[in-house]
Length: 395
Image 1 (cartoon, one colour):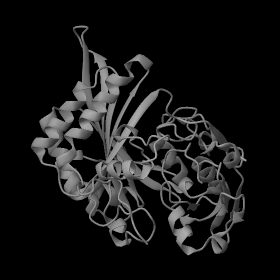
Image 2: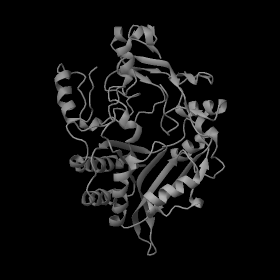
Image 3: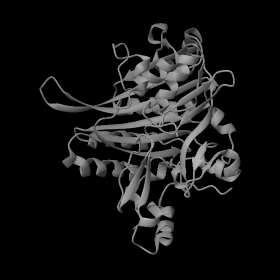
């Protein structure tokens, strides 16, 4: 019907698109809304689950944990992202893995699968997880040059840790009032870790590899796997009455204000002198919230071929680097967008190049947008593609 009357189709699972592309368009459109299709059928014996496209990963985490706390799925920690197999093509035909063919099945497992057709459900393989994981989060408030020493060490060793350990870094601005009543921006740095082992082993490992943290047993927490995910999601504070498994089912949990995210991949250590300037840029972000998030790769990621699935960021990536800003007043939008664009431009020499890589799900619309009325969409897209950050794989 949409083809006959000339309407563009926008597909929405949970609306978790950082640019709102699931529910906005420059041309007349119709939304195919899958949010109410959120059935989850778990088979503990085969360690698999059939998940409809409208189910969030928080819901999957919750119901799998209810069945067996030693099973889970490999996904992120933001509970409101939808899990979206059965497949509906442009003619309305439902396809499974066999009928769609191997090439298409390969393609839809990467970002941007809505470019091919609409996924309504798929089968996910579950993985074994420990009854308890060990974690800590260390906050450091130091002068920039001291912070740079720590992050420089982090970027050189975090991707080399064993498969059972993940050490992340976050820099976040906080706007405070000092003793003289003046507004002041400070940078809070968090080094956060998840370890699939015991407290004693973790403390011993950290004191050998990162004694600057000064980790003691009392600094560590042991949580169930699902509680570990909730802790790092940030949707509710640990130790409060709202910190419970049910928060995974709340679709409105998380970010409330406006925000913008950009993402890069780092292949070689960023010089300390550059990191000083990168952190100084957080002070330029005025009265909103600016954040950098650094997530290490390496380890198992280095062992997976870049052609295994259409997510090519594997071998040779040291870590993933996010730039994030958020604000509350709509009239401040351009100020914060200009800030994050400035950071993105500054980072050009220090991140992956030729091409500069990013993850497709974080769309950079300010790089350029096709004109839907133009007859030269392909030519224009080629220009944008050469400027942009996406690496395209050919089968």
